[in-house]
Length: 320
Image: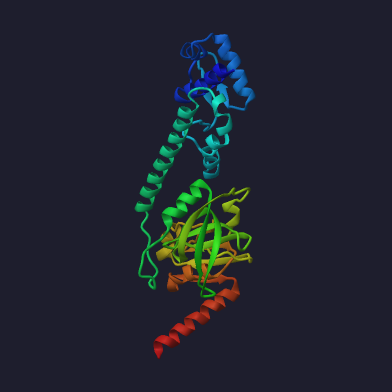
């Protein structure tokens, strides 16, 4: 049984290292008969190892991105495995020779891959340059810790500053996605305090600590969550805006990299009719305002009136 187990692992490693390897070569490398290899492949298939035969003369390979190496452990799985020697201490005399060295090699591979991934995350973090809020003297972003926690699916503990209430609170958050918006980074994840999905601005984190607790995103879908959200601020409304952009800037509007899908209809005079549905108006209104008199809100009438009143206040301000 031990001999077959070793051979099965060797078959998996050989197929992974050389996709398309033939049964004949597998038999030669494993020092056994081809018919034994066929029985072993059937056994692996029964264990749901996704090995596929690509046809006569084309050999075997894994389906999709299946891999036995590097070890794709969660922190919880690695912790559980590291406790194995202490659990088996009482029956250690019964374990086969070589168990200790095999265990050390497996844990060594895990530590090496963990270190390699940490280096990659650090390089990515160094490449991403973030600004700092004007009121803060330090430029700590905690981006490295958040990316690392998201990749390893670890819950983070943080002190977060809520601007609307002007207060700090300690929270445990499952970091699902990092989203760049308007020169800032936001974290979308499950907030344990709120018991729901929340959006957090990275610059408002006061500290970040990775916990040993792991999480699963479940069926969360970012695209559905952000549907009809103009930038990052989500709402419950469905507001259909219709804006006319002057011909001089129409081509620049078409180049805007947007998070929602607008309907853009070129007009005969070169202007552009821009139609989009958003669930919150504030960020969209700010975006339209940057184009000044080259953008005219046609619908809804109520927001056309909001813009008119805003322009009136500006006029009074600058005439004073």
